[in-house]
Length: 90
Image 1 (tube, rainbow, N blue to C red):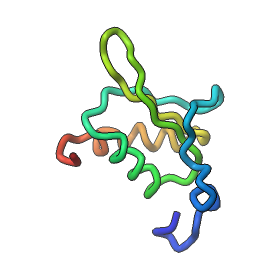
Image 2 (image 1 turned 30 degrees about the vertical axis):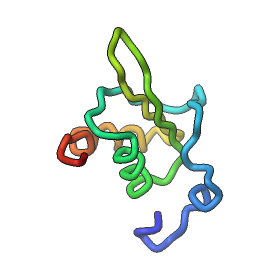
Image 3 (image 1 turned 180 degrees about the vertical axis):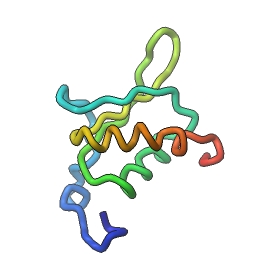
């Protein structure tokens, strides 16, 4: 994380955000009221592992799937989700 004075090699090489969700990633599914950019910006600033963000259509409702390679990051994201997913961030 650059805010702590160290560069993340995954960021430098553009390998941090994946375009597909590997099966071993820990998944968090929720109804988002903010854009994907707000979510990915928070992840880039506060976490260090690889992740995936994408839409899921389930039961006529559009949900967002965020998945993390490091299970602890999924737990931290889940705990902070009520603060991240606020309409005031838009």
